[in-house]
Length: 83
Image 1 (tube, rainbow, N blue to C red):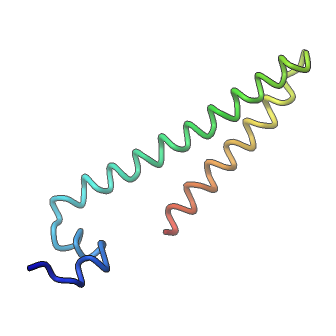
Image 2 (image 1 turned 180 degrees about the horizontal axis):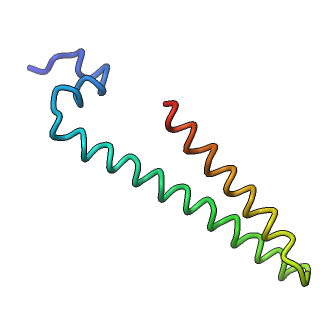
Image 3 (image 1 turned 90 degrees about the vertical axis):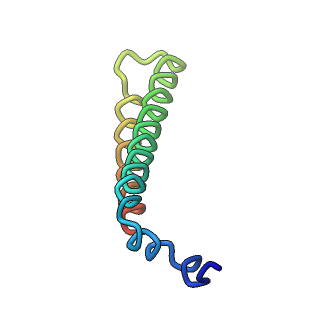
């Protein structure tokens, strides 16, 4: 039978099985990196579309939204690291 305490704290499961720990961490940080890239690409794409929509010569929306996207990606990463 399984120990009920294993279901409550998944971190203890990783500590008991160190072989699985590396793969779990790799998957976690790979997913975080993909999430950050998607956030940045979506905000840059939105900025480009807004610049074309308003017919701006200088990429004002692209710059502003790309900076906001980077900040949002960093916020997401820090929030995940704290967890």
